[in-house]
Length: 298
Image 1 (cartoon, rainbow, N blue to C red):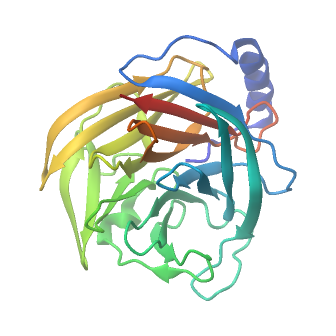
Image 2 (spheres, rainbow, N blue to C red):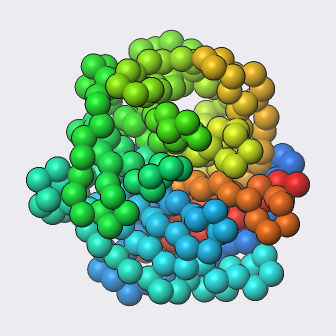
Image 3 (cartoon, helix red, strand yellow):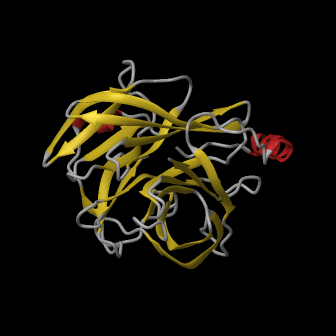
């Protein structure tokens, strides 16, 4: 979701975040904080990153902007610390006719990479749909729609995408469209959409991205925006067929510990630990930042 921030609210947020930014309250949960890096890049369209996919070794990445642009490069580390982002390249997203849509039209949010063919899948929130691209992002191809995708609120549609090892697509809206308890999870198997289960709500957090880890668990990144500050949380779920077998907390940050984390990629590092790489959407505001954050699980 792109936050709608007016000029007056922007000024107030700038003051609040200047006073509270860099808070060091340790997160709750078993995950260990590893790194936080503020990424700056001299391009007019840089910012608004709502999705990220990291390669299995954690070196190269592809990130998605909600203005319809792809940024790719390498994450350079010394030990567990991120020291710089190198070899950055950028291309705009094309539509299904090979054209570049007008600025702000796409509003892409969910981002996932297919584990077997390397194609990238993107869900769009304003005009709800899912497209997929080859690794060069040369042209968009449609993914079969589910009829109720048109029922989502304009700013509460398909925010999260994940693809399991069998190639099944999981799509999760940010807002619950039917008033029932739990966030619905839509799954595409072959050419058939279904809603096998719902993710239980815990507090005021809303889902913003998901990813299947190499351990087979579904990881869910969530965000809460209150008191003019962001909080982030990750839960993971063990799925068996059409049901959730286990739900576990991974981490939950305090207010203003991180910026507006919206992208999530889960991989295994050289020490055998599950690593969560996340990126923040700065909403193209001067008082926010594009932050790459990493946590690990033993």
